[in-house]
Length: 138
Image (cartoon, rainbow, N blue to C red; front, top):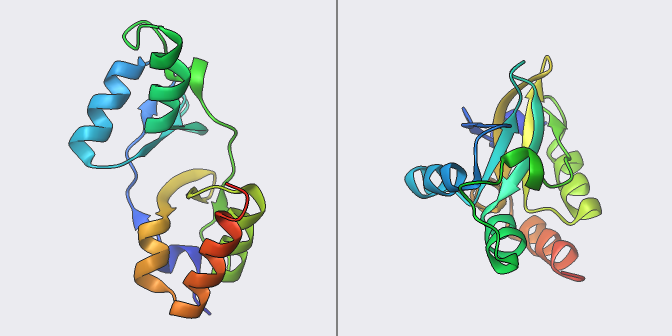
């Protein structure tokens, strides 16, 4: 059985819930990622923020990314347990129409699964089915 742990990108870097979106954008640039998990002072996962959130929801509305915190713009949070079967990973991503999924073990963030991990680790048939479902209504 292939699990979320088997396909995840380990060691995701969090942005703090009180850090601003300009810092988030810099982190995304430096890490070459399109999303960051948001962690609270307790090191628990609180949300996720994407590059799209910053551009569409903050900048396009004329707000200053340096004065808006990650707390203000976190997206709805979906996650998967590290031991979950890859079919559950796909089902969760498809059901919620998300392209990135934090991986949790013992209430701690241990990695992220994105489309890149899906593409590297699944069969062509699984990839085709996944993209068809995630992008069908996107």
